[in-house]
Image 1: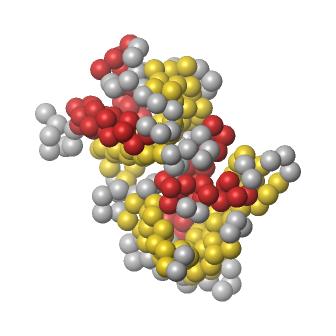
Image 2 (image 1 turned 180 degrees about the vertical axis):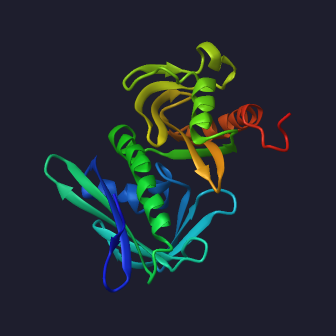
Length: 274
């Protein structure tokens, strides 16, 4: 994967995934606030006269991203343009849905900006590498939980050492070490007995990047995503729960303080660490 460059100065990356569903069903998952919040980050669309004019995505405290909707053609494509990262040129994001035979669609995302230098290529490449993990969650959502109500919990914490050290600490604490795709896993076993109840089937597990996905049945139907990454020179660990069904919101409200307390104990901030 790499940044595509055009003589005009446009630089862009493209990532796509094949998912089950009709174009209308997939559109609901990628072009509504409730849909995007079910597999990505909390998202809201601003409506005017019945049409979306802007979309806001919340990547964490103080990390909101707002983009104006510049094109809208359901259930095929829409484009948003918003502020770049850290002073970069404005970034356009085009989403599209393409129907394929066999009851599946291809979801495609193109991120692009105009620049005369390579200063922002690393950010584009980072975005390109980030999409596949979220797209795997989208595929699980559309395969097993399509159209259900959802609620999301996202937690991050600093970790000592390298990304590899952070991943080792997180997976060891949760009892994930040694599991394989398709295997049943639960926090109620072994070293993870002090963690809140979490259990399901391993859907994806990799160390390049450090990432794992679980299709949950405990504490309710949903997806758990684990990760370790470097942010500004600091190793971080992340845990996200996407819970589905009529009780999703109350399940998240109950589980979030439990997991926050667990993360605070296992991964204290440097000032709190003894």
